[in-house]
Length: 214
Ligand SMILES: O=C(CSCCNC(=O)c1cc(-c2ccc(F)cc2)cc(O)c1O)c1ccc(O)c(O)c1
Ligand SMILES: [Mg+2]
Image (tube, rainbow, N blue to C red):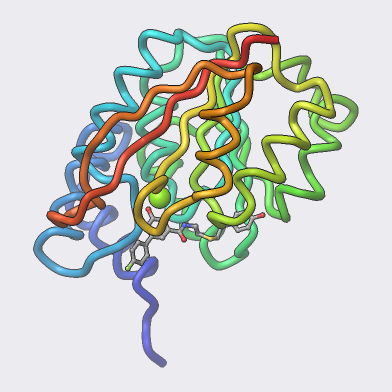
């Protein structure tokens, strides 16, 4: 039977990356995506912007919406202080199965909780079921038409506090027009656009960083 792209990406990681070395896993995935097959990881260019936002936020509780193969999960987790934790939500069980193995290969599994399911169902359970108070940082990278409803849901569930950071991938390509309009016009957010490119291409894309003002 045919292998899937995530399976081939995992194969490259297990063949070429050093166990327990997150940077080596990231480099291997970026090389695979540049030289073999494009895949929808945030990538190295936007990944550097993600790294800088994570380090300046210095978060203790992070939520990632959309795990895919775990590339950004590994990038974020590798920058977290020892007690910090990252909850990542993935809708697709095949993606989740691959991501768990990438996360473990990188050695960051102790900082990561991967939960399978739809963000719309899981976000309302964060406090009661996952013991979360509020999130310091949220990385949005799942279905592009879920960014806005899930942001409103996080507000309603009291998961954002004054100073919480939302960082959204793909606000240009594939694009999240309703989300952008909301965070750029709402008095409850201070937004900033980081111009970049769609992973592994010359197509314009960018990250939108929005601070929740309470
Ligand atoms: O993670 C998922 C599955 S959807 C994957 C989202 N990502 C994309 O679609 C995505 C796509 C592209 C892209 C593709 C083709 C192009 F020609 C150009 C760009 C790039 C990206 O960087 C992306 O992130 C999930 C769904 C529901 C949930 O409720 C949940 O929690 C999670
Ligand atoms: Mg993306």
